[in-house]
Length: 290
Ligand code: UTP
Image (tube, rainbow, N blue to C red; front, side, top):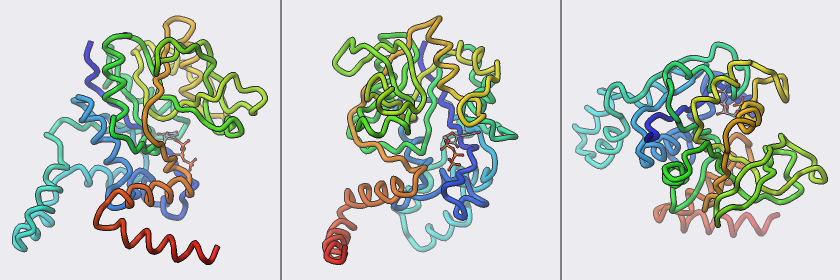
C-alpha cells in the first residue's frame, strides 16, 4: 500500500520559545524566510504524500492562513508586477481538501497528538513528520523512507549517529545493521545516560508507521515527563511487528531548541547566494570579538 497520508503534530506548547510562542505555534517561526512547517510540508509532497493532517492546538489560525490563499497580498503583488513572489505564494496553497486539521485539546504528549489523527488516517500506513527536526540534505528524507517502505513493508524511523555524550537527549536504538543504511530495531531506550545507551543511533522526527500503532497509543499509557510517548507505543509495536531505522543522509537541526534554531537559520542562509557573502563577512567580523 502506498503512503498517502502524513500527520504533522503541531500542538506542543513550545515553551522553550516563550515569549515568541505565546500566541503562535513554534512551527510558524521562520528559518530564513519560510516557516519551519513549510519545509516539512514540502518534504512530504516531494515524497508523494497526498493528504496532510495537522494536529493543532494553539496557533492554528496563522498556520491555517499560511496554507490558504491571501487575496489581499495576491492582488497587491499583481498590481506591482511582482510575478515571482506572486507565483511563490500561489504555489504554497495546496488543492482544497489536501490539508485536514484536527485538534489535540490538551497537550498530553506526542503519542497522544498522533492518536488524535486515528480516524482520519484509518487503516493504512502513514508518515509522521516533526517539523522541528529540519534536515538539510540533497536526498529528502521522507521520499527515501517511502522507497524503503515499498520494499520492507514495515514501520520505520529516521535515525542519525550522535556523539555518545548526547544520548540523554534522544530516543536511542538497540539495533542490528542489516543494510548500509537500514537497521533492524530490537529495542529503544528513551534518553539513556551515555553509559546505559545501547548505541549512538538516535531517532529523529520522521516516521512511517503501520496503523497498528493506534492500538498502542490508544492505551494512553503515560511515560517520560507524564506524557503519552510515541516511543512507548513503538516499543509495544516491536513485540508484534518489525521496525526499522533508516540512517538518512544530511544534517539535522533541532529547531525546537534555541541554539539549534539559530544554527538552522545560519546554515540555510549560507546556502543562499543573495545572503552568503554578507553573512560570511559578518561571521568573520564577530569572530574577532569572541
Ligand atoms: P516537543 O517535545 O518539542 O514539545 O514536541 P513542545 O511542547 O513542542 O516544545 P517545548 O519542549 O515545550 O519547547 C515534539 C513535537 O510534538 C508535538 C510538538 O508540536 C512538536 O512538533 N507535540 C508535542 C504535540 O503535538 N502535542 C503534544 O502534546 C506534545
